[in-house]
Length: 624
Image (cartoon, rainbow, N blue to C red; front, side, top):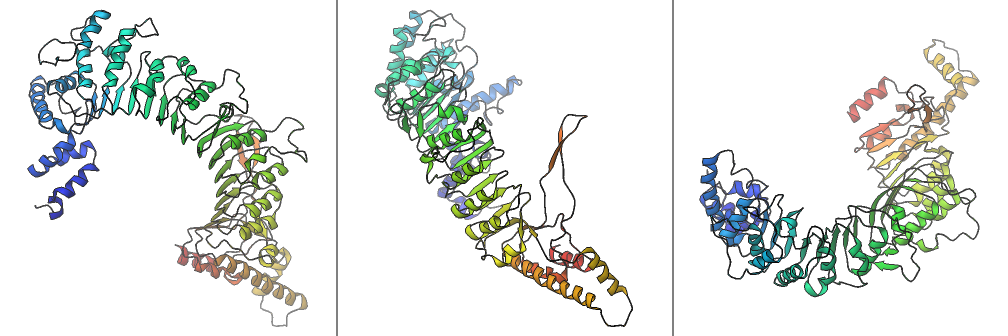
């Protein structure tokens, strides 16, 4: 079977090879000789002894096969050694091959060993062994010799002066060479001289990860030793070396990862020392144990773009830093009060997304704002686009003023908001697209203002949302024609009473021939008027052609109640039907919804509907 002509063009295959992983490249080598010659350089571009295919090609449990594979392995790597760019040393055979064939074009080297590299093991001899390491000018690895593997690794580094990334993983730096004694935190002068000389021979180094007590003094020498460094991983046992970093220490470092316990005041020192830092990762952040208060002059503005993992709200407020470019910080469990939220928005002036599990109540007497309360003066025109507050105890006036300063909100999810806050959202948040909230009291006019004042609204959902028929038909026209999801009941629909429905049913089933009585005529007229009004409502919903989810039922707020037996909590929903709701019969205009071709779900929970056989058959034919 012949391959397509396009797959025989080297230019096309080179483009494909650049997008594949090592496993796929290795499989492509087995297609034909032409593909084998073309994909082989890409296979060896990145070699890691703990990844496929390098991991499972040669197994120690089959000695004869291992011996044969070792020769084939060495020959294959040597043939394409000029294409090796990324190498991870994590076993002895890979180290032997790297020194034997003299790999000299690496751009990335990662050394990761768990055991001692000296074969046979030899004790550390202090300066004597250091002198052996220093004399590397004419030394190369020879196969079969019981040589010092420590010296071999340093020789591999010196053989590749164009290295851009150098990483010592886990405890491999201790195994490579104990430049600092195990009982000392300050390296000896000979060790410092050796490491400085080695790093000075790597002018293109951009990323460095090193440990064993060398991080502290190495960070202080970065501007002169490595003027082009952009990324550093800090793995010192203690973070005390960070305290002495001067402001504006290095203007090239963009990415910093600190693999040690660090406190909030040290984060301030680091950000002041590296003013152009873009990403800062602190897996072991220890909070703010030291009580440090920064004055207005000490607070700095920093253009950090990414902070991981996200720090808790109080920690961000105690760093003494305003993150002018930080747009997201992850979720927060709880904020103490309204003032903490405002302070958080102040130190994060570019924040676009904020998730809060709970905002606690302010101390007694402080939750009611005073007329001259100006805590939120610094968050005018807040750029926040997404805000989620699962639970809160905010005063309505503070909530109103808070949302009045958030004109860029696109997504909002909040529980229990009063009518005046709903009205403020409709006036201010003209870009709102996704809105979810709950109410404890009726706010029909305010909900109708949302559909009028938010032209980009696509989704409105929440418990106990309902709108009166007069506000819907007599109010301003809705402007959100891109509405896709709507959960809102319709109230105060003119319907027949229970007695009137029973009388009407009797009129239908009876076989009398006498003329209708005045009361019966009134009931028929009232029914026709009710159908006309309901038809207008359903015709109104049918105008929104993009609707995919329409729920005109009444999902009331659940009542929480304790379970004495298990001590847990569960929800009980009141299933009483709402009497003055839509009838949803074909006679009342249900057929208007036939124009909603994108509709996927239709909800009518707790609605006093009268869906009969004709309506069920119509729904099955239209929506099945």
